[in-house]
Amino acid sequence: MVKVNTPWYKYYKGIKKHLKYPNTSLYHLVLETSKKYPDNISYNYFNNKKTYKEFIEEIDTASKAFLELGVRKKDYVSICMPNTPEAIISFYALNKIGAICNMIHPLSAESEIKDFVNNTNSKVMIVIDLAFNKINHIYPNTTLEKIITVSPKDSMPTLLQVGYELTKGIKVKLEKNPAQIKWNEFIKLSTKYNKKVEDKGVGEDLAAILYSGGTSGSPKGIELTNLNFNACALQSIEGCHTLYPGIKVLAIMPIFHGFGLGVCIHTTQVLGGTSIIEPTFNVKTFDNLLSKYNPNVLVGVPTLFEALLLNKNMQRMDLSYLTCVLSGGDSLSIELKKKVDDFLKTHNSNTTVREGYGLTESVTACCLTPVDTYKKGSIGIPYPDTYFKIVKIGTQEEASYGEEGEICLSSPSLMRGYMNNEKETKETLKVHEDGLTWLHTGDLGYMDSDGFVYFKGRLKRMIVSSGYNIYPKYIENLVDSHPSVLISSVVAKPHPYKQHVAKCFIVLTDEAKSKDKDAIIKEIKDLCEKNLSKFSWPYEYEIRDELPKTLVGKIAYKVLEDEEKEKYIREQALRNEESNETRI
Image (cartoon, rainbow, N blue to C red):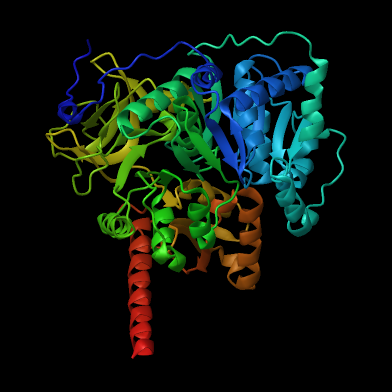
């Protein structure tokens, strides 16, 4: 038995310390669930409900279609989709035949998508029709041979299909490409495949690639195995301790995000619960979503809970159906947690927000606040079979309880590594003297003597906006490539709903200082919007004569961030004054 300090075990009330992990595919675990609960509702998409028996049939049909299309074991297939049944069916169908799902954000820039596709040598892509033209533009320069297009209406009930087509669908004009095949045509290929489809997947097989910035900020493919996903699901079910078969989970976190794919989908499907699928999320209609589906579990980032408090229509709602509320993706402030907890209580819910912590490098959540114990400012205690420790910065030496250092974790859910990047994999995954492989997260924090973990900040520069990671260095490298830019710095700017957005400060070259600055900013803005994912576009650009420097001559981005914080506080105070005057 590995000797690791585990003071948190005393809070494992009814929770097992260690679990058994089957040496199987993701598909196999869901298949076993379908045998236990064939009539449970697997997913609900605009009130189009499918039982587990029907869901498995859809997966099996799609697996035959993929095989008929030429997809084989260990092939990479790109999925560039929001949350729809077709995306989830494809994920498990490809897993059944041993193919690897390359999960791409539909709002990624064309250049990013091209790299993601070519780096995995994907010959097939499943894409939402709204993003098809973007794929079509890069198609000649990719390895793609077939592009399967899906419309959000494809799995909607008939009346909603008509409504969607008359409002949104009519605006979608797909360019022509002989490689394109619509989902319904693709599924018909299954009738031509007459061989038996066998699931031979094992735990160590690669299941999916998810993208994150790693430690340096440029997008990296994170290799996640069957065991990683299955361990995360089983640990989440055990560690959460309030989930049960038939429970309804509002799956608004996207499937190209570890939180969405690992918890809202796979954990729910392994459990026998219902994933309520939504392709888009609008904070203004959040109340309609809750009243329509009455979910038992709400999983989101802090901005989701901000929206819950700001939506005026929520004030009259009864939330007694909410039995589990989980927050992750970014740190939840003590003040916001208190406000949400008070809101839940006054709206008849007996639960409180439970904060968790995780990284895409560990699929998603691996630490969670216990159901009956909360410590102010803590992100909770580790999952079963998951170990946390704090090490002194730049070392593997364990820090004392209460001493701040780098958060490290070890778990069966840890990634295999960064795709085609051995150097950064070795810098992130390290074997310590205890014989375990530890993920050095790049996050600062400490652990108290009870084993509760506290997140304090990040060693690496990163901006979290609505739960998405934005890497300043990646944006700066792009902006600096503009001929008029001498140097740039991207920092976090406070935002009332997204918590933070990116702001870009720019110093121009001497030659450019006499030129039209508005025209230059427009060129830089166009450059960013062409080459960056939409969620990481700078929210604001500002040209300065110079940028503040540290004593060693580096850009003092912290000074710029402090300026933005002070400006935001002043603006908020001014708004409050104006609001008070209006009421008087």
